[in-house]
Length: 335
Image (cartoon, rainbow, N blue to C red; front, side, top):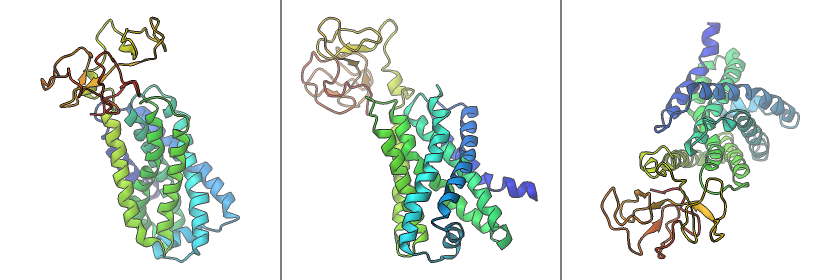
């Protein structure tokens, strides 16, 4: 019975972990790295509990949290808002992010945009699984352990994934386009806010009517993050076809079109900026390896007209001498 009591709370997290792991179709992550990230996420629940216990000196919320979730217990809206947006959301998302940042975010296996969401999901599910153990253990004396596990398996466990998907997107976005230092902190903050909003709509009777719209919006956003990761994966067949042929670097000057060397930031001939030269067919959006291609190898459409567009931002490339988009470089097809 003790073994079942310990393993039972892990089952929902492991099932959800399998579901999200199988979303990575093009280049599945090493199982060892995913499971270790799951374990680190579980360990991160320890610091989160300590920090929340410190905050409990100001807000005696632990019993009210369980009661409000299960039995509709009433808590003053101001206390609920402070608890959700200033305590639970920021602390738990920071701990989950830290569990990912110390290992998976630095691992060479994180080599495509979707990987950020996958590892964020693994850390979030490990965190939620340990949290399940704590909640079920504390509720065992009240004979509501099975009910609490069911509620958390359906709400809290996938909820943790949807919150963390925001900063998972921030991690994966570092593999696409120019670096933006503000994006990752902004996505961690967004995760904390939606986490707080989720708990607020569950605990506050006045806001409970907003729970279903919020849940639907988070499901839609998570699906969009997954699709974005797949679309921008360098292992996607249509993108793999656009990789430079042997003997070339795939980098060119956006001013004169001269092939650049690996590591060059400016053209040695004219001083122009060096960017990846990847363009898309105006008809089917398949990548064109060379700007000099007159017809698309995928659909046969002519590509020698003013309708040629940047594969990333869609800007019309009316100058036939441009090898990449002057605005963004055209480094990743949006197809």
